Image (cartoon, rainbow, N blue to C red):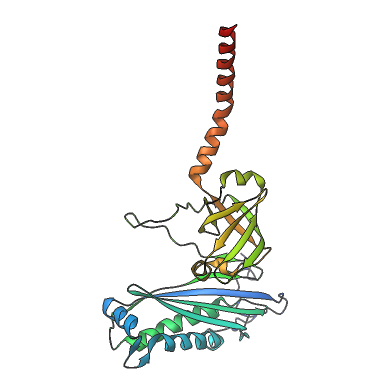
Length: 294
């Protein structure tokens, strides 16, 4: 390996620290979503659910503001990072049983992405929540901080794939394997006050596996099929789906990964394989009946 190939990107010619030169990169819309998961424990979870406050003040509101500030201060905290103008920053904190889920979404239009801003915002919000609640419980655990999705830039889009369930975990809804069958394209999006209808086109051969009120997996999200056309199908997204999944960020013209019902595929393929034999047997039996009558 040459010396040039072995050089760190954040070190210059004389091994002096430097910021990577991104001046030649294209300016594109960038979005990133990050999440932090905090285990609260039963006592603290009940307190936040009922009052939302500790002796320090309102917990979720304070953590929310801290998360936004964390996004804005990322370049002050991460060495060699770029001070980016943020055009939108949203922090949402939800209580889920004995856990709190912090979700941070950041948007900009620039030469580099905002993954670090979203991750820093989620981290600071989680730490602030801990600080606000440590008088009640010091047993809180910040279980994870991870990137959920990023869009834009040369590296393309990224979507986090959740790990499979452990043996014995409760499983509900449709069974999804995670194997992508084909790529679809979002043709139309229709918004209404209560939901969003999305029309997706794909190769006609795959539509044999779809029926209205059946199911389809779009970018890892299991959805009910509303209607099926010659080379398209439609789904309806409720507000919770738009909020909790990457589908809320999709726009017309974007590509999506599609997975079809494995059971339906097995049934269709079995019928296609057996149909010639069934047809041949039916014709043979019909001839026998005709000959017997003659």
